Structures are given as structure tokens and as C-alpha cells.
Image 1 (cartoon, rainbow, N blue to C red):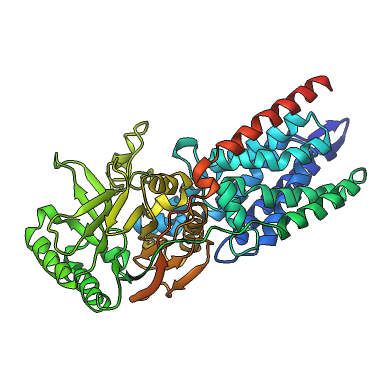
Image 2: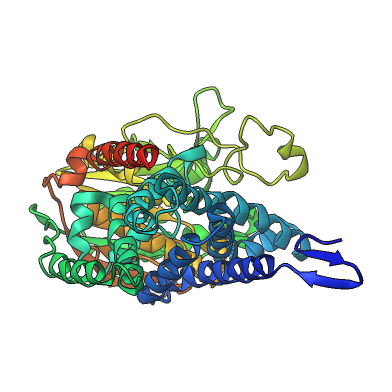
Length: 503
């Protein structure tokens, strides 16, 4: 007999608590499924606040871990639907198998909100007010953990919701993980205002929150010299990008566009893996490219793949061609995409199952390329979603960030816009301009306040011209990182744990 149903004599009785719990699980799942609409390209930020508030109301009542897992599966399982066409088209996987492949993504990432919800209830020992007060603090801890555990995947991070609002300056102080305090605190205050015993505290809290928003700090503007950049968007279809028969067309697109752009800019940037072969194995192509680039008399940053000296390990990164120099500087990608660019060592058999997975090696250089007074901090595609990667480049001397991208894998899905949204936060956190050259888009120039100052439509073959400034400012987040915020969590958790024991 199913759980929640029992028999007494000849009558079947239904456990009302079980039925109520199932409905709450469904509500949590729906709240989670609403979360992606708060991020780009939709940007309905209020949806996230209401969904978080509804979820908090649910975890205050029963079985917080299960309610949290349902919320997380809705958020990350439904939110990652764009992986299905990617797996299907480029895996290649049958559509049904591609759908099933996304399920583990939702479950694994869903464990993070489950842990967040469970910790709130456990530390609060069932006290509703404590659950509400702990919710924002533990939300920051969960966001940080999601960005670091098992190499991390801080996709659709709650702090991204501050972009294009007057509160964006807090990201330069707290970083994207600490910025999660604002939307989670607002959700908690809404719930507190609806509690019969504590509604007055909720209203006072909302008033204080309004003051906090009104007096938000300003972002840190760039303080260096102005330059002009040309970002080349080649719009090379992913299905053709690595095919030898399309190589002439690929190279001609970038060279023709750059020949014109060189007369109108101080630097040219091509997207990730714009040169889709090893130049060291193609001396004729290498000589042809060198001749063209030297004729332009401007620095050229272009996405390229290289072989290490042993000739066996491949690197994905950025080459810098300087006028009057035969040698090219190279910055390698350091944070690779698991299951996309390498196979984790604990599942080596995956290569036999999915042979199309890349086999790259992470780089260990500074990630900074110097062209005159420009010190370009390289963020290759996926690296732009990680705050620690951008901070490392700035610590190494970068005064402007360059993000080369190939999002053609994702087609016309929200993934491209969510990727851009994450990259914009790196500009705010470091106080640097970010130059984003993407194969199919979205190419953009991002100011240190997170604004997109120039962009072009995606899936178009275009050149984006725009201005940027170098910068030597040091934001509080660049200086201290996440440590002050995480250090604040320790005494808070110790106090709540002590009070739980005294209860």
C-alpha cells in the first residue's frame, strides 16, 4: 500500500499530511522553475524575490531538505533546458537521451538549495524567526559553495540580479556571492512582514532595506587612458567551425574584417578558437597570417589552440600578435569545462562512451598579455563566470579584461545571455572594462559599472567598434575577495548553534 494511505476495516483513509506535503513539493518545484526568468534575457528580477519568498515560506514548515531539493531541481533542471539541443546536436545524442542527461545536472545542483534549506531549519531548531534571519546569511554561503565545489558552476548566480539597478555598486564591495545578500534579504523581509507575530519587524526591516538601496555605493570608474577597440564577430556556424573545407572561408572572414578595422582602432580582438587549427603544424597558414597581421600595424588578440612542447597536450587560449614582433605571446585557459574540454580523472571510461569530448590541458601562466600600456587579462569563454579568475588576472597586472567566447554551441537559447550577464559582473568586481568578442555573439564592451556601452546583434557577421579605458583602481572586492564575508558567517553560525543548544 502506498505511503500516506492506510486501511482500517473496510475503509481507505488518506494521510492529509502526506497530501499536503506533496502539494508543497510541487509548489517548491514551481518556485524553482520560475527562477530562470529573473535572469537574462528575461530580467524579471521581481520573480526571483517572490520565488525565494515562497520557497522560504515552505521550508519554514516541514522537511526542508526535500523542499529545497524540489526548488533546486526546478531552478537548475528546468533552467538548464538549453543543454538538451546542445547535447542532441553536438553530442551527438538522441533527443530522449539528451533530455535524460540534463536530469543529473538538475539533481546535483539542486543539492545546493537543499543543503541551504536544511541548514536553515537545523540551526534554527524549528524557530520560524531564526529560519528567516538565517536564510540570507546561509544563502551567501550556498552561492559561494556552488561556485567552488567540484570546480564550481556559479551559473545564474543570485548576485547577478543587481546588474542594471542602483544597487550594483555593492558588487564592487561584496562580489557576486556576497551580493546575494540583497535579493535573499528582501525575500526574507517579505516573509517576515507576513508573519503574525513579527510583522512589525518586517516592516521596519523593509524600511531599512530601502535606505540601504537608496544609499548604495557607486561603482568604481576606470581611471586610465582611452583606447578604441574592434571586436570581430565572425558568425562561424558550429557545425562548420572545425571542418577543413570551411577553413578558407573562416580565415577570409576574419582577415577581411580586420583589414578594414585596423584603420579605425588601436587593437583588434577575435573570438575564442577563431583560428581552429594548430599553427605550428600549418607553416603556410602561419606565414600567411603573420604577413596579414603585421601589415595592419595594430595589436591583434585572437583565440587559438596550441600544442605544448611535448606535442601531445593541447591548450586553448589567446595569442597576441604585436606589430614588428615575430613571436606571439600566449595566455592559456586555466579553468577548463568539465565533460566539455576534459574528462575528470575519476571517470576515465567516459571517453569511450562520448568520444567527442575535448582533451585540453589547463594553462599555468599569468593570463595577462601586454601590448604597450594595455595589460589584457584573458578570460577564455567559461572562465568569465568565475570571480576568482578575473581577480587573479588583475592581481597579475591586468588593467583591462578580454573575454573571447564561442557560444555557438547554445544556439538561440538563453544560455548566451546568461553567460554575458555573468561576464558583466567581472567588470564591476574588478573595476575594469571588459571587451567581449564572441563568435556568434553576444559581442559587447562592458564598463566597470556593468553597463553594456556597445554591442551588435548576435548571429550576424559584424565588427563592433567602441572605446574603453585602462584602469589601476583597486576595488574592495579585488583587495579582499570573499574572505571578509565568509569570516562573518563563522560567528553568526556559532551564535545560532549555541542558541539552538540552549533551546
